[in-house]
Length: 171
Image (cartoon, rainbow, N blue to C red):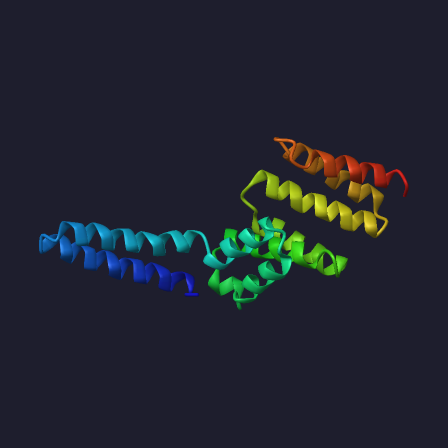
């Protein structure tokens, strides 16, 4: 909704307003207003549209997730670097069903920008392995699957990895 730096300016202005409330001895107003500035700081670190897109993906509503992602016009200007990585990660998940080449580019861009969670990196590498397998690049797919297996510490992708290995035997 707001540019990433505008969120910080708004948070700072609201915090200054809270200080004036404390000076005037309106303690509850000051605390409430300070919490309001915390919301803008939270949205600086966690983009609201990405959060809503993740919520839609959790519900398996890919059309809804795509709708929220379209609200982000210029990801390089509107998002921090780690948020931008997740933007491309989500875009890659959306495009996987339609264009493997575009999905591959988006996942590689997400990995190069730096996904922060290990299981997200594993998921991106698993999808890249699927793309490589689809394009008959067996060695690359095997390497990516092994990397995904190492990164999947909690075993959340164990079933998908074993399914991909079974499919690779057919190539």
